[in-house]
Image (cartoon, rainbow, N blue to C red; front, side):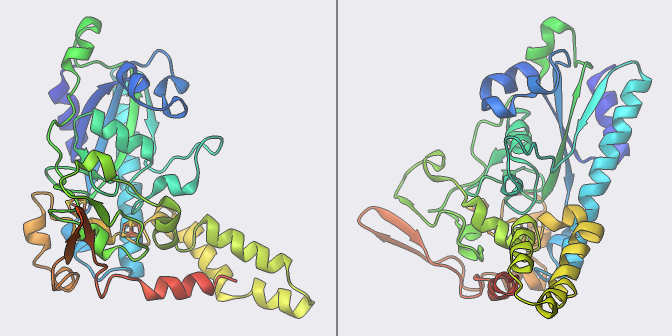
Length: 335
Ligand code: SF4
Ligand code: SF4
């Protein structure tokens, strides 16, 4: 089967981006616990898929339950599409194993591995870079030329190849050579808006992005997984510390319990997308010109990003409307 046939089928199923890399390349580049050979030693092709976040969702008022739920639905529809593609490949006599967007191996990873903004697991973001879909931004999020970071990811291992065994390495996609993110000094919008100050806000003047990009993943998870596992554990601790039956009853039937149930039963993948502010403000991507017309996005950083430079160090000021006070309150109300 030709590569174009596979890409066309993926598009028909609603998958916007398809990148091809190999198990061998990922094994070589990724840390031991992420190597795809842990899943299979004979499926040699690794496909990475991206589904765009509609401009209406990215342009909506931030932190609304509607936006979070929409993000969960987009994740689910991507996973279903990749599942369908797997059946289609198997119908053509290939083998296929899907890799869901937010899959965690709890022996080696933690829920904060799915930060920032619930874009996907770290493994899939690194695989997407190898498969030529884009480069990592200041906050370790995948940036694509088409949609910037406004894309969710999923993957697949298969024995389909874009050519013969010998040609697999040559026909796989190459990583994008130039950084799409201009860095903290030239941009820094994600760092300025982040409610948790989880994104680097200072760097040596002129330093390359690779030297300072990063993310405080646990801090990000407080906002992006607002009723996630950490919140759940705090709630359990509070239940166990109840002194009286009345206290216990009050905590069991509290809005916190209902919120956790709603995240697990209704939002599901949306439980990881409680904050997507860094995605919304990033100017990379062909979609950004339209997105920036949203009145909500125009309210994000009305003064732009304030940089200060002193003694060779560039620093970014947190935006006046950046810190997410509601998330701070939510955190404290968990107990
Ligand atoms: S803006 Fe939100 S999703 Fe992005 S890094 Fe900060 S807390 Fe995480
Ligand atoms: S908002 Fe700016 S600094 Fe942040 S990832 Fe996007 S381009 Fe890079």
